[in-house]
Image (cartoon, helix red, strand yellow):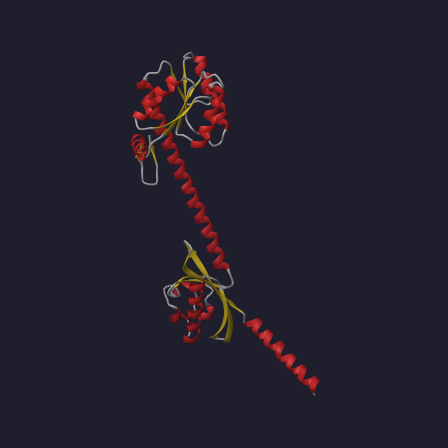
Amino acid sequence: MWYPLSDGPVCTQERLKQVDKSSTSAILIVDDEPVVREAMEALLVGEGYRVYLAESGAEAQLKATEIVPDLILLDVMMRDIDGLTVCRKLRADSLLAEVPIILITSLADRTARLQGFEAGADDYVTKPLDEAVLLARVRTTTQLNRYRRLMEEQARRRQTEAELRESEGRLRALVESASEHIFMLDRAGICLSSNDRVDHFGLETGAALVGRHLRDIYPSEVAGLYQQQLDQVLNVGQAVDFEHTLLEPDGEHYHLDTLYPILRDGEVCAVGGICRDITDRKRSEEALQQRNRELAALNQA
């Protein structure tokens, strides 16, 4: 069988070999017989596995939660809590629900095996243990489990990337639909991006601003003011508001601009900007001030 991965189709067996070499699997051995525990430990450590031991069902639950192993070898016949009960409890734990469990049992009849699978076990090995059989089951199970984890991680990564693209799309749509001019500058004052609210420059699209320096966008006086505010944001790392005027085809317009830092790893890597046309507000304020002056003059007459 072939699986489509991000780096192209890879045969399952070849992928399992890659996964097996990537790191060492952790195995939890649960058995209340010291001789059996130590024998399995010596065998698996000799094969390069990281081995953890538990001598009771209660201890098994605690250690499994602590280390979240790649595989649990679980004895069925234990004195405190039998292995089938432990298996059910492990499966009920969301953290351990997908961890493979191989039962170690002296019960070889069909009913016992069915009870083990119903409890949530993935496989079983009978006592007395055959080292070759045990190693083969351990090797196959750990490879498949780590392959499953790899696939889940890739799926999570793809989901995260898809959510990020969706978020960026919503943000882009929001920026493009805004009534204000929204843009981004690099630390040198060169425009990195801009929405299309650029009619105050006599332009139709913001793409015409990308790659241009402040001094190539604004008249020299306004460009100098912008550079001062840009330097302040870069040095202080805080947003600044300032006003300026631009001569446009229908006359002089007032603008209120905000520059704010864009951080990466705690450092200002770029500066965002929002430009608002406040001409109507300014003219209303001027008209109100003029009327107040006229009323004051009348009162003094």
